[in-house]
Length: 346
Image 1 (cartoon, rainbow, N blue to C red):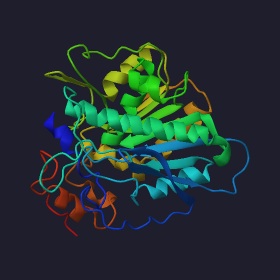
Image 2: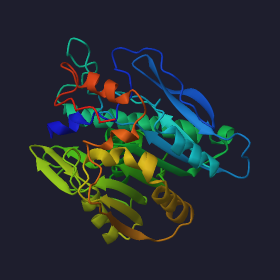
Image 3: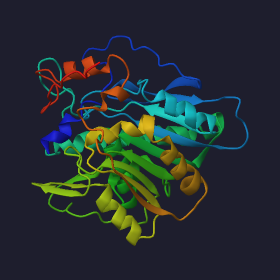
Image 4: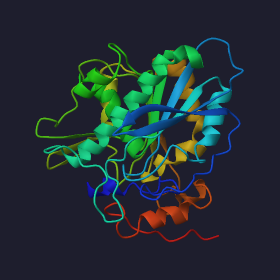
């Protein structure tokens, strides 16, 4: 499970303890930055992408959480902007959020955020990310009139650590978790979840099974069947248990909940990034047919390739300069378990 802290290739070009000015990604859509919550005296921001001239009815919302092992990353990532533009052109409002990084370390190697005594550090990293996702959701609900959005059509998504946050967020709502009860309006639920290489992770002797008190919302999973970082099926460890999309989709089927599972056969953790560039049709199908259209579909699609994209050859999908930034974060003193990778051949 230490590998869960090595979800590093999703990071942006910044470290959490050295914050140069970030370039603003180019986008066709109109972008506004707002402060949606303050934690420990520090504002947490989100970027809202939309075409402001779209005024026909309430618009659905797509919230995206970046990945980076809860140790690094930022809402500002040009890799995501083409997808935002695409969805905005279809009438969506896209929201890229920041959240607290519970596994981040300073230059001295010490944690920047210390969990309360007795709180599992891994679970704490997830839970504060979920809290911030809920805070962003609540802010959007309160400002629905200002942005002409539909609070009943909010979809959450993310890559890797962000996908885990999203899946845990939905599970907490549907299992009556304290964080959900205290953070969201009563009776609220998301309209969909789109995890890109995510899973539900729980700690503690009693959290050995997913027990849904209510039906979850529809989900659209993207995952590599050979992902060594975030489980595709199920994994159990000492006081830590992971439930991946293959496992969760079987529960959704039993509960008669619509879902789409796109299994990348032989692919590893690369599916945390690939959907942002290569799987727009599949994302559109889920959003159009299930979330907006209300169709009762249950799909498990398996993509096979003679040479599947893996952690060793995914780099053609990232923005220029990200490879060098990732390796800097894999240097000594970065997140545990990190390892440099060879640069791709030009």
